[in-house]
Image (cartoon, rainbow over the protein chains, first blue to last red):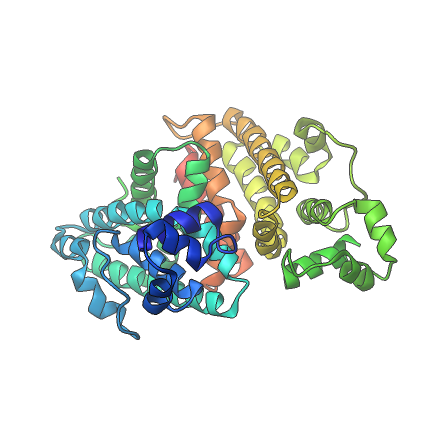
Length: 202
Length: 202
C-alpha cells in the first residue's frame, strides 16, 4: 500500500491523490486504507517514513510518540557510522546513505508542499523536520568525537545546520534539475561537506 | 500594487490570494488589476520580478520577450561585478546582492509552489528559473576571467550549477529556519562559495 501511495503522491501531488485511487492501485478495498492509515495526511506521513527507511524495510505505522534515539540503532548505517575509524569515514557513511534517502524522498516534495495548506499536513511536516534535525544532530555528535573531528571553530550546532541545508531534498533536486546523476551528487555532497565541516580538508 | 500583491501572496499563498483582495489592499479598483497584469499568475510573476530587482526599482511589466543579456547592464551590481579586481571580489559582489534578493524572494516561495498546480504557473516558474540560470552563468563567465579565477578542474558549467543550488531561496530559507540572521547567511554563502568554486581558497 505505501508503494502504491508513493507512486500516486509522486505523480499526482497531494490534492490530486485520493485514498480510493491509492486503494485501487494497491489492489485493496478503500476501507482497508482508512483502517490502516486514518487520513490522507497520515498516509503521506507513512509514505515519507517508508521512503526514508526504504520500502523493503517498512512494516507498519509505529506506535506514537517515539524517540529518534530509540530508532537510530535499528538503522543499518548507524552501526557503520559508529564503527567508522575517522570523522571523514563517518561523514562518508552518513552522506552516502543520506543521498540515497534524498533520491527516494525527492519525488514526494511537491506533495509535501501541497499538504502544507492543511493544518494536519503542516503539523506532519513540522514533526518530520524535527526528527530530521534530531537525527542530523545525533550523527554530527558522533562525527565530532572521531579522530580529526570538526573544522577549527566549527560547533556541533553550526555543523548540523550546514548538513541540514546541504544534505536536503531541495539541494538534491536542484542538482538533479541541472542534470547531475545520483552518483555525481553523492560525490559532491561528500566533498563539499568534508571541506566545509571537517578538520580533514585536504 | 506589486507591494500589496507581495504582502498578500506571502501571507495567503497562491490559492488564498484573489485579485480583489490585492486591489483592496492596494487601494485600486479590481478592473485596474486585471488591466495592468491580466491574470493572477502574471501578477505573481511581476511580483517575483519586483522582489528580484527591488520594489523601489520596479516600474511596469516589461515588453516580452526580453533577453537577460539586455537586462544585466541595468542592474547596479553588474557594473560593480565588472569593476571587481579579482575573482574573489567579483564573487563577493554577486553573493552580497544575491543574498539580499533571496531575502525578498523567500516569502514568495510557498505561493510559487502553489502556482505550480496550474499550467500557466508552471510555465512562469520555468521561464523564471531559465532567467536565473542565464544570469548565474553570465556572472560566472565574468568571475572566471578575473585574476585567480576558478578552482583547478572547475568548469564554468559546474560552478554555475553549484552557485544555483547554494545561492537559492531554498537554502536561504533553510538557514533562516535554523535561526541564522541575514548577515550570518550572507557571510557563510560568501565563504562557502569562495572555497568551493574559486582558486583563492585561503
